[in-house]
Image (cartoon, rainbow, N blue to C red):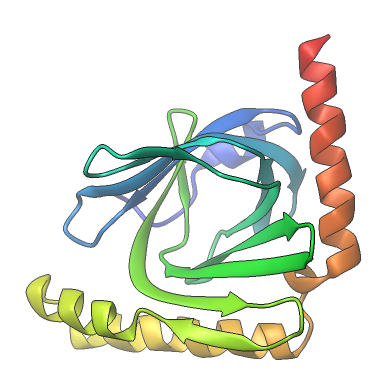
Length: 188
């Protein structure tokens, strides 16, 4: 799987529907979401939304997300950000992952285990350090990749502390409204 973007980025339109496929370093699919609707297209990233979308795990388990989500996939950053709009506030689930590619109406990326969970009160927690160490060993991550992944986590935390756009509560709520409108327009 290539890690760069192609000319396909120029063909994306607001309202387009994609699937998401998350892989592990060994090339095996880890998880897939059946819907991600394009909400905004920027030079360095694309914003998608979904709600109550079907998720299929590698083992075959299937479940649905519970709330609207705004997802930021970056062209060159080694993470992606999911803003989960819940009744008690916005939670962020951030994956340390390769930059995304678009291929056959699908957003694809490689997940590198480490996650950052940010709570509505502003506190955050780094998750899955042991899983990262385990996969690093069994999938033989190179020293160079380890540096890139750790740098991705540091950059993500720094972006959060500096109030980067993807952590803007008002903007994420606005994207939530855009998602609702796009979905209504698709029904008509």
